[in-house]
Image (cartoon, rainbow, N blue to C red; front, side, top):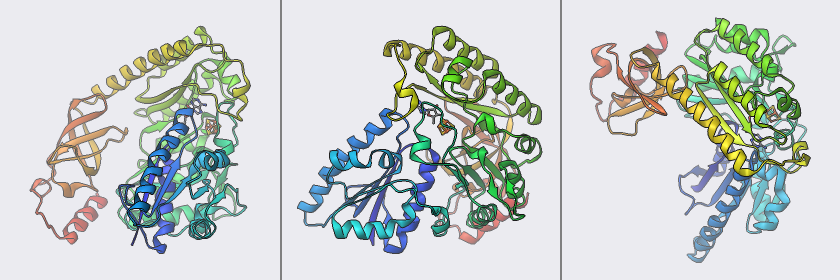
Length: 471
Ligand code: 5AD
Ligand code: SF4
């Protein structure tokens, strides 16, 4: 067995890609380990979205260089170091210049060729592959790993044609590509057969999905969701990350009609000021965003929203920033990510005048985050006393606890036997913390609460899951 360590930064698409890289390498005898020190191969799956994300890669490479050397000195053989993902795509040449001990550099579009690339890199002492192949990698990937977990990711779309002026994604991930519907349904069925109860559909612009349907027509994301909802045993469907422009009627209707589609949506708005949105080339106004949220909430009144924000975009005035705060106050977010603008080489915004001081950007970020944190806490507090379904997927942090997610993506922990992982249980929320909820299992039946038998037969667990799936 060869040891493979994969470290992942960035979005969920990278998490999915990392899993698939491990799948591709498994037939070569690579098995995942959770430490880099003694690995035969280390892959850094990187993110280029902001400057900080990129710099982290180079500091990690510094540490790996020492580990590689130590392994060689100890006579344990070589450690192949690979840099993958968006930094690799954007800065392939810079990586080999700054870190010549890196053996392999490959972008997000070529990892289905990993076995060949690994062999070539070993033979010729290094390889850089940042092609955008004509054939989509998805058609050349093996089946997903045997155990996808209770909550699985499924990539349905990749790339972006929107060209927001601040963003590197259209350059690192390339043009929009949607997988054919049949392939997606097949992969979803396999995931469910292997124990997934929840699937999150992934794409940089996932609601721009327009995959070939079995009827020869292009299907949108809404139609795909209706189709996936027919899969027995698939209890929860989510998708991320979406763009306000692509929130079409069918998708909005799906939010109202498909019970498996969870009432939580990450819908980035970036700014509340039309001037800034125009300069960002977002192709929507603040009112357009408000109108979409209204329609979504009409369809699904308990829908909770999440967003991304950028503060200090070049030219953002205090009045523009106030517009962002106003939008946040009006909409009310259950959760959000906010960032200081970070100029990225090669993007149109990088050429704009940026007179705002870093201190002013920091002040705006603090003010926005304070408001968003208050909203998140209020949203969590409103759950106290409620009885809600939770999909449990892992052991909790404290002994005897298990942890899962509410329909609104909140992390929920209860004291309960570990075998309930994989099932959806009703809980009563006792307490709201900043980032999680503490709850008590509502007694379904005595069996559900009986303590774990250490080596409880797998069959019993499977029967329990089947029963839960049938509810
Ligand atoms: N600077 C700051 N934030 C950025 N994002 C993307 N590009 C930049 C940038 N250059 C943020 C956006 C996007 C999220 C994934 O990252 O808010 O939605
Ligand atoms: Fe980047 Fe805009 Fe595309 Fe999102 S929609 S990936 S922010 S260019």
